[in-house]
Length: 226
Image: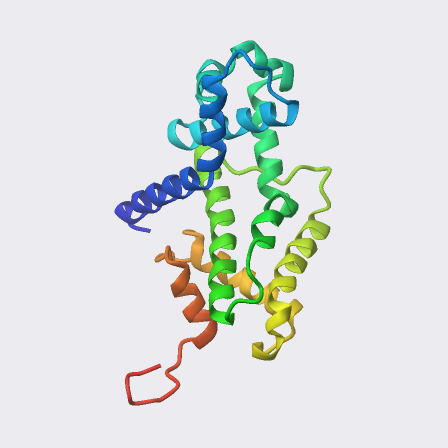
């Protein structure tokens, strides 16, 4: 891949992850304003992870726990009451990345009663955002295997099932069944998003939807129209 294209893609990854974390960062901003108030354990953990992920993507693995604490609006010592080390925070972030249930709420929010094309665009947008999040973290700290305690095949199957559930109400529009379509669509999104699988990643989810719906052939040969 050309160097310029690689840098452009990394910049897009950074913006995509920052957008993904925006709601969590709004929480950490509130935390900073009310620092004296104790945080619920789950909220404190989420704030630390969100701040760490954003800093990893922007600054790389050399980020310090002091910087993380400042970004999360907490005392540095609070980090070590939740995570024993910075590496443990990174491990928790990657576990979240690999866990399909972590994105279940995003998928559940998709309106399955909407027009098929609208539903498909929302679905591809969510899938692509999750892939780009993982790629941004890999670029920041290097590739990591999924946590050993996770059932890799079971997690993958669950991911397909979540996608298939969204496609199922539109079964009459599918050439294959929802389960098989979920596999094909997930593979297509990955292939057209990952910079090591294509030299021209599709940053626009609509382009992937168009490819999924229309393939590569014109429906009316010779007319120049799809």
